[in-house]
Image (cartoon, rainbow over all chains, first blue to last red; front, side):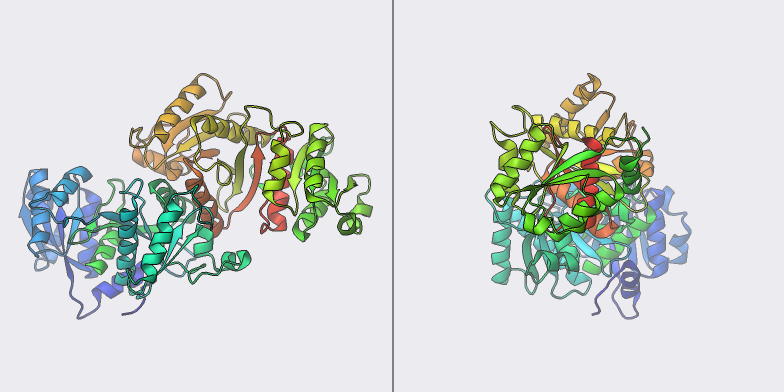
Length: 302
Length: 302
């Protein structure tokens, strides 16, 4: 598999002849941008769908006729029941990806986390991974966690590294370089995160993350700018070439997400990793483009 | 005074005929980039200097002759003594700005913090403010703290807001809009920083920061992108128009600093605020350009 460097290549990869198309269960696809993302994904040939929701909103869409063999409608008016049915489709193996439409995140999360009928195995950690396409950068950069885990425990950091590695591999990066982000290169008792990072480095050396290369602490510039590492004399197999970034907490992750979006016009795709299928959980304010790229990222990792 | 929107205007402002030129005491100007920054500041007419250090390194520089009435040499071979003498020049009112050359940050900080001979009044908080010039953005954005205070206390956050307001005013922004950065717009007990932010908002309403407008919590995009606030329906006098950003901790501040530098090719100026004069404290790896802009920022706030 080729190394996928941008979202356009991702779409081509997913639509390639002979590739098994992922089937996406969408809970409550009732808003315009979700319905448009479904339409475009069908047109691009990157996914098939089971739409769980209000038939009055869904049935009249032209794509229901145009792609009738690739999209199924499961009528369901109640939001919580729709969430539970979409989750059940994944649990029963009838869908490879779960996607949120117009319902509260909490309602879908409850269905995912449900002990009896959910799709999170005991001991698993749900973490958010973003893939960002920054103009001028020659590859996608994956990072965690800008959305779900506020202040990660050591165990959650392990899950974050594994999740970022998984998404990188879904994009054809067999030995992803994952940087552990901190404001300095020093391991110090003043910053407890650096002790967790030391543990992650050891786990990596012991093979816990397969062929991934995990190194840090280092700052964003050292991780992503090949010149910076050279100037600082930092000797790391990652310096400047990171495929993945692990942030110390949600504040730092969110600042990265919002800063590349606001000042570098980055395009982002986001998903939850850790359940038995990838989960696409867009914000209500996300536009069609962002929902479509998130959907595509999830399909690549299904 | 006019609102200074970029570093070029800042240089012109400082060199304007009739403006009192700030006098900068530099401890150990022994490295090439510091000496070049001094040279360029003299040529631009933005500052005068007292150089405290090794005469063998300094005396032969052409600027010592070319600008002999604007630059003074105080010979001093010992680094700690040079730091103490530079600090004393500020204390005695013979210099308006303090700048670090080639010595360890800790050595200069010790001289600044010295109870008997230093320049930090009891109860004052030393905080770092960066001014960043991001291509495509129509103004400088000031932020704190990416370098000095790891995990701010409530008292330190107050000092951070005051310091950012001070730097904004040095650039002619009489009523700076200062955003309190957090990953969400909600005040929540899960995030203790949001309680501090509530207090800062109240202090602002009570006039503690003069005519500054302090609001938050909000994320970087809501603070800096006028469209984002409108989409999210956020009603804030700041939304999208922030002059200043207060980050929850050094990790988030450092991510912002490094991300705009690495991915948006931002040019930054940095200084310490809180001592009796501004302090320019560049990293050893900073280039001439960065030392010159930092110097200029400090002169504007002296």
